[in-house]
Image 1 (cartoon, rainbow, N blue to C red):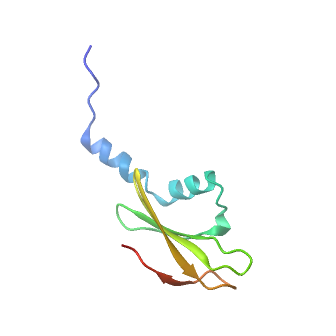
Image 2 (cartoon, one colour):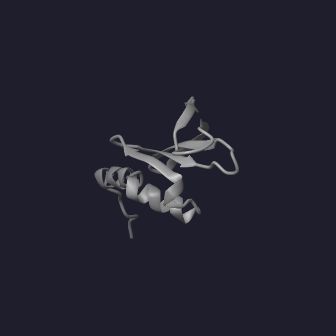
Length: 93
């Protein structure tokens, strides 16, 4: 019995679909992040970018994330302390 072969086009489609905004939101929800904390979900072809609002008790912490299939990258960012979620600084390597 031979091992199953993978169709490279199918494999690429699967990797792309893993980074679609609805799946990224569902994954973040499953990690405990409510929709109110998830901001700026934007798909740019292959990747989905997002921000997580982690502000509590006057803090300003947020995270800037990139979902690219099986690869994820999250870096800290700084948001305004109060009011609507607005990013003050964000540095991506």
